[in-house]
Length: 309
Image (cartoon, rainbow, N blue to C red; front, top):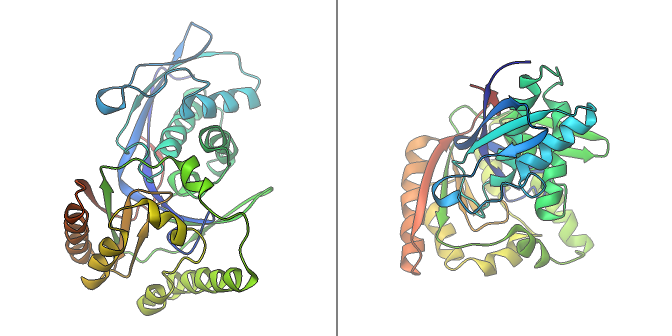
């Protein structure tokens, strides 16, 4: 057992437009850091969070980091005490995987703290428990890329089968987080319970083409695969200025633009950092035109994912 461990887990973009619930990618920044220390007091103690995150729960049964760590400890039949300090960098209720990044960092830290030796991918089920607690659905399109890095494809959750996809090195992402709150549960409830065969067929074509584009680094294939037939036609109604923001990014050279996760953040995937900066600034301007202030993040795609500090 160690005295103290720090771990970092990055924010993510889930769905990546055409890959609803099965595709996501990790950013280099922002991210969450968790500090874990052993404690003589049994159970999980979470320190009060700071600044704009101070209202997040510290009850480990309600905090995603606490839920994930408890699932990890239960799997090892460990009755120990652990203190967690969560330093948030990922905006909450923003569609950037905030709940997942805290859980990922916490599980990675505690795994190392108690020298459990669990492999990185085998930590994923514990994080999924926290995602289920947060949203009602154990989706992995935030958790897997935050844990593993890069683009990840969720082939199956039972059994867990996650595929790491290639990422063109020059890729850069602009994410714009407007001053707007959309809860993941609300964003899921707006979706239809079923889709037509023709819609499903189109969606399969889009994601297959997108994955092909990543392997071949064919920017034109990636560009024309940035279409969502399932979620965005419905979720876009929750975001004022959606069409204008998307048009602004694409007009300045983005490969594609869409909703990050369940929103309200929107992202533009670009071939390089210069294009991402221009597209991001245009997106901020489009949100401002409909009366929404927003925060801009520019980040390369993180190939590393969660890591010890």
